[in-house]
Length: 264
Image 1: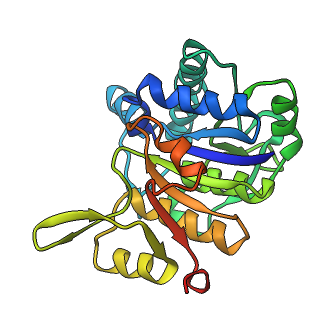
Image 2: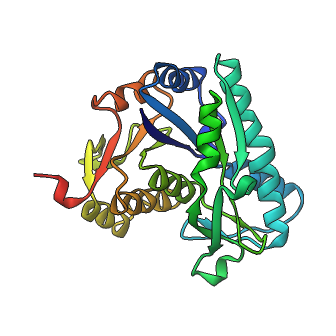
Image 3: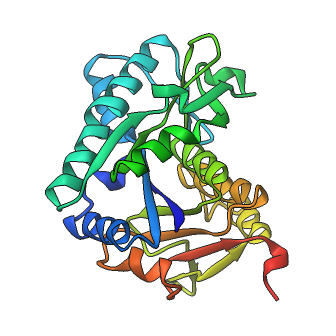
């Protein structure tokens, strides 16, 4: 059996079809792959912050997080969004168990080096026994990316970074779910999907702004994971039925991100 960490961003989660959850459940039932969902929740966080008149800003796709923002982040991620994903799994015929990175010190974190981000953290250790316990009970783990420091301080963890950390700790494949077929580039006025990209190409696409905004931490988390021996990273369309199953079965689904030396 092999682990696959499936990252679903907040903007994608709001509209993911039932077929996506059915594909995840199908993976789980076949027992060859063990799916773990790590989710975001940006749009809902933005909506609640706006209704509370709390200002929020971003630096390189990461949310600047003070105490007030952190309370809202945890409320939305570990409450509303996490339980919605679990309900969607149950409605599609599966069994999900939601957990925060705080619970059982699942995601042990320290402050990010970028001090201006406030209580944004990076994961330094993943308590994999928490995940393994959920899996052994027959559930699909659903992880909210809020981390915990040694002193009990909570940290807002970018969902892509959290997913990469979990994948690294488990030696799992990592798959980012998107609302587009993969990484797209424009040539002669037409957009086409890249089936495979290298670390060097990703850096060039960031430099020329083909990759921008929230996609930046996604591809950087992918590259970091590959450097730390994640077997494979993919970005696929969660709105196309069987795209996840096609991906794990080695079919041409989405964009595969690899290190340079892996391409002949």
